Each structure stands twice: as C-alpha cells, then as structure tokens.
Image 1: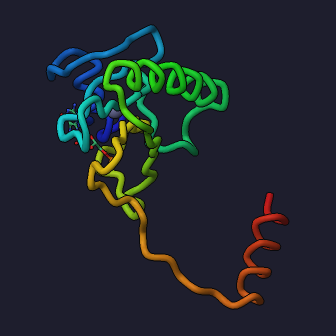
Image 2: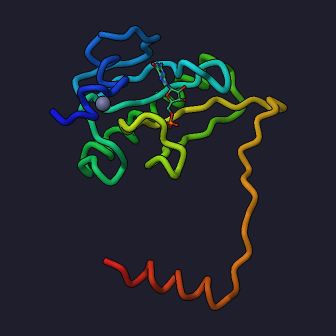
Length: 140
Ligand code: 5GP
Ligand code: ZN
C-alpha cells in the first residue's frame, strides 16, 4: 500500500474508520454525502479501490462508475426535487482536486440557487486553436 493510500481520507471512510452519510454501496463502489455540500444532496461517488485520477482507473471500472453515477443522479434528483445537476471530476491539484482518491461529484442544482460555475474564458488566435486541435487529434 502506498503512503498516499495509507493516509487517504476516502480509504478511511471506505474502511469505516471515519463516518459518513452513505447513500449507496456495492462491492466496487460507495457513494456518500459531501461533508461541505454546495446544495442539499451533494454526493460523491467513489471507487473502493484507490485510484488518484480518471487516467489511473481501469476502463471497465470507469464505465461502471459512470453508469452508477447516472443511476444515482436520478435518485438524487427525485429525493431533492432539484431542477438540474452537475457532474464534476477534478483531476490533480492544478484542477482543484483536494482529495487524491478519484471521486465524481453529483451536485444538485436549483433555479436561482446562486451558484456560479462559469469560469472566465480566454481568447486564442485561429492559428493557436488549429495548432492545438491538430496536436490533440494526432496524439496517441
Ligand atoms: P475535490 O476538490 O477533491 O474534487 O473534492 C473533495 C471533496 O471531498 C470536497 O468537496 C470536500 O468537501 C469533500 N470531503 C473532504 N473530506 C471529507 C470527509 O471527510 N468526508 C466527506 N463526506 N467529504 C469530504
Ligand atoms: Zn484512497
């Protein structure tokens, strides 16, 4: 077990060493309420096995967690009567990942809930846009 796993807060929740408001569990995944919810029902869907980011988890397991996220999103909408919801995965510190154990946020949204998730945008030249599009298209 790596050092980061030993100290991982979500691994501790999975092992039952730290309490949580559990909303779902099976042999591969667990879902619980975020301790600092942006809205009522804000849920984290987490693989039991420790992976840091989307790039680390196996394809099949990522497929399964996305299917589960779809199912739980519907349940959360039903329970909270939310008007919409956002799914979010932060990968690595630079992208705002605070807990280095992969998790998907399901965030219920309500009309006029005052949350603003629209980041300021940047302008790039046509040449720069074409260059990065080609680079992504041609990368393996
Ligand atoms: P990240 O920024 O890594 O995508 O989000 C981590 C999330 O985990 C945060 O929204 C934070 O509130 C939540 N969190 C951190 N520690 C705990 C905890 O001990 N229990 C629960 N339920 N959520 C936590
Ligand atoms: Zn972990």
